[in-house]
Length: 293
Image 1 (cartoon, rainbow, N blue to C red):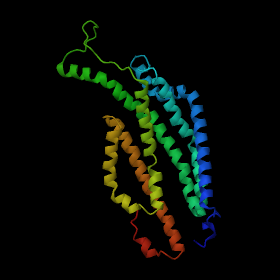
Image 2 (image 1 turned 120 degrees about the horizontal axis):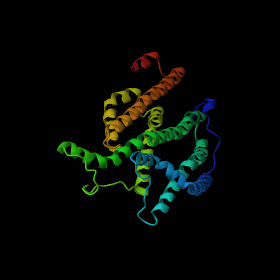
Image 3 (image 1 turned 30 degrees about the vertical axis):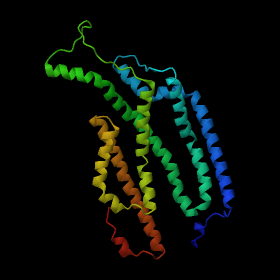
Image 4 (image 1 turned 180 degrees about the vertical axis):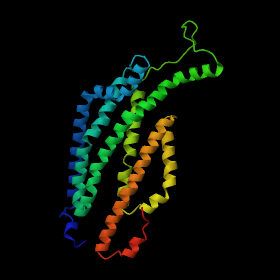
């Protein structure tokens, strides 16, 4: 144990059975909080659903079509609302659940470790919300516009290549496909974008934590930068539709987060080197070997 007073561990010599009892209490409180949040979200699940599918409604209005979604099974709409209640109930209760887990783990940490780890607990949900908002306001409308408009692109492209006019007479018009969106499928696609971008925005938190643990370094992140670019481009091609604009947006955002992570890891390394220098474990010659930014 370190002799520094700020690194003293909280007095907690409780036997194993008491720790298990405390863990049970924390879990019960977390489950109760999740259940209450889930029930509360169920009563507002319909407005939440309307908010999530609003990008589709806007695209349909712009196309002059009726902004509506259908359900093809009697129970489909009900289970869609249940799914929304589960996901948003977990999101709302997560701060309280995280607080309960923190109260269970914190007594076993040094005070300096608490001060270092606590900011990440705050930054993680904030970054997730930023990523989810970005996906809902920017990515989802672009993706939906591409997917829904794709049915019109093929006839127009065929007419352009053959030199024929697009038929406007209903009697002579060939069979065409129209969008009758399923509530479940549309919600799933919107949630996939929200969750994917929310997790992508966790990149600075993840890499900074790994930097504090000594698992990654600034030099290592710089050396694998070209591989990171290829990986991000691959992610953009898989997550987003074959729309260049959407892929470029995703690439720019995620790569910017990667560069931000390098800056944060560099700050962590400088702080750690300063502490080691103060303890006499690192001299200026060792630090000078670190590559400059």
